[in-house]
Length: 235
Image 1 (spheres, one colour):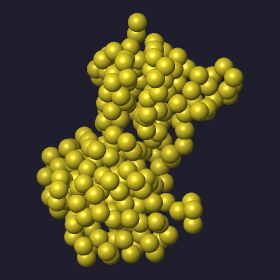
Image 2 (image 1 turned 45 degrees about the horizontal axis):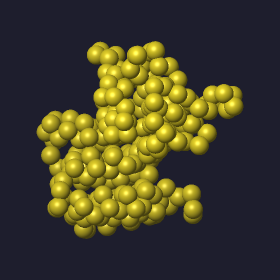
Image 3 (image 1 turned 90 degrees about the vertical axis):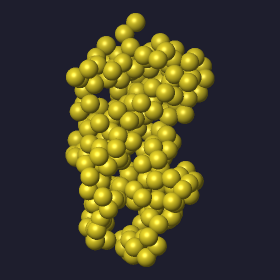
Image 4 (image 1 turned 120 degrees about the vertical axis):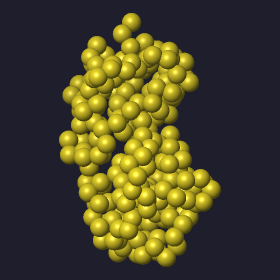
């Protein structure tokens, strides 16, 4: 079906990947696969999956680097798999933007259940505009954000943002004098039933800040408020 969700399975264990793929196909998902780091990034960019099942240990470059690169252009949910239980793996995985983490061995049924739980998280636009004539365009410093066309301009130049980056910028521009907590940003953009790592917000803010700076904004256009969260720079 055209509205079927897309899953990218990235694992160099061919037999295991085939079993996982068969389960997702049976559940009605459109499934693509990759067996190394470079092809995983390429297929994520081309196929625009809703969910990436990503093994940590891969040829080419590892799942951490795959996750890092995917996060620069996609808000796809990322479920990382690893055979290692060291806490450092989990910390590093979430630091580059993974949404959930599973230690192998894991049964395909459990993996499907975990994937369904992730995909049930809301992906709707967090802020509803009541008066589109006045509220659809937000301006702060040299940034102009149009919620109706989902575009962002910096000094008149278009900046391409992912869905999560756009929504984070939008909510901060709507309340530019406030420092918003990570929890507030998480619930507004990811949804109230989020149960993953709260610092996933920092990853997306980092990518957003970099894109705004590359377009001409000051380094501190998005301020980090220690012990609270983030907000727009007060000028």
